[in-house]
Amino acid sequence: MSKLTVRAENSSLSHFPHYGSHKVSIFNSSLRPQRLNLLAQKHILKLRVSCSITERQKEEAAEKHRIVKGLKLNGELGKNGGFISSSGDELGEAGNEDKEVGFEWGWPPWKNLPQGYKLIGTTSLAFVICNMDKVNLSIAIIPMSHQFGWNSSVAGLVQSSFFWGYALSQLPGGWLSKIFGGSRVLEVGVLVWSLATMLVPYLAGFMPALIFSRILVGIGEGVSPSAATDLIARTIPLEERSRAVSFVFGGLSFGSVTGLLLAPPLIQNYGWESVFYLFGFLGIAWFSGFQLVKEDRPWSFTEPMSWPPSFSRNKSLGELGTSLKDVPWKAFFRSKAVWAMIYTHFCGSWGHYTCLSWLPTYFSEELNLNLTEAAWVSVGPPLASILVTSIASQFADSLISKGVDTSLVRKICQTIAFLSPATCMILSSLDFGLPPWEVVTILTGGLALSSFALSGLYCTHQDISPEYASILLGITNTVGAVPGIVGVALTGYLLDSTHSWSISLFAPSIFFYLTGTIVWLAFASSKPQSFSEGD
Image (cartoon, rainbow, N blue to C red):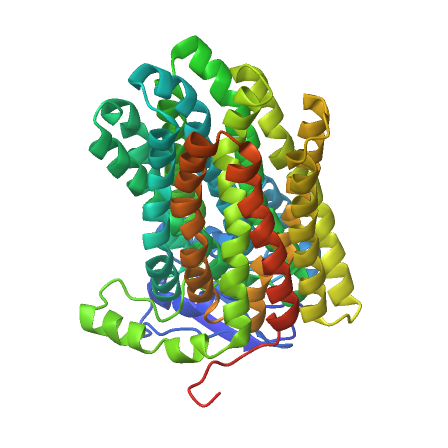
């Protein structure tokens, strides 16, 4: 039998989040097991526990250790030290307990980070791998075309097939992210695209199978933007949103740089197949590591998380269908701001996807650079984008924190993102007799400044509706994937027909950049909208 004494005293502990879910059944007592609900208050209960059964001490110590790990240490707890002593000490009297806990929590280094930060960090890393798998074909397509005898039209078809799957998965990805949480959708997407990437070398000789594998890569990567948007909308406040979006989506630029740097030496030393094996393996490794980060979340975590509280693994198809019907689709398409986002996303994607797919070939054929040189100069735009992204996010968040209207900030950023590359493409397409390094520098500067869109268009989905942000991005990104399907293939067709890079690559992008700027300035808005049927 044990003796349990509970007495109320003042406490400087700020909260006791986990103990309310544990029964007192660890004590050999005649008391019936009950739940102790100790809520965060200025004054909470302290416990004095005396137990005459020495066999229970180890079990009590283990229970105490588990509770400690669930607590969020603050300065006051550090001063007071421990809170439960199996030998009968009162709360806050074990003066050296905090030192033991601090030592135990020292590894891994990210152990004490808020779960939201850990999820956003791993999401950014997923985007790094995402673009590595996206750009690897833009380099490998050159030796693959030589090996299999593909012309520019066939090469454009192979590269554009990725965007078929990318477009198809946008809306389902947004809806599933809202229902199941962005983290769950993201991990499945990474696994799918990584496995499909590793299949490319086995299927390259059979065109239908190769195209199907690239469609699978597109499907896996297509759910990623919506999943990331869901994470950010649930965890990041408005005044920090530009930096969060830039950090996560900035992983795409870093992935482009990494992929373009690694692909040429891998191809030259181990063959073009090696890039698909290695990059696919990295995605599978990320999937395994993400399980540790995801499961590190305590169930009573107080910050908003990507797992909706109402989530159930056993949702029926009927319930999922009802959730889909509850989305205010009609209200979305009655909003001028939504239509502005749709067209702007289309315009930005045209310039981005066509350049991402064809710039290495442009540098190789038009500027007479070899494979390694073409890859190195192709690194310039995404590498410069990393710097521009950090500047743009700080610029946008600073203006918003100072009280500048959010819509105005988003319009300024998006205008810079469109007019800069349009101007640089005009300069590059005109025959000024510029040497290759000057053309490369001009294009690098313009495409890097297009990263201002991360603090413009890509923040607007969360601005107008955090609840439906993932679905809104799914809508705009579905339309935004069309240039990947049409634009990439059309560029190859025009190149075969006209043999002019200015007409096939630059002219269409310039047109969409300019018209997109006009539409954005006229109709875009970051004003929160409820999207109720009565709006």
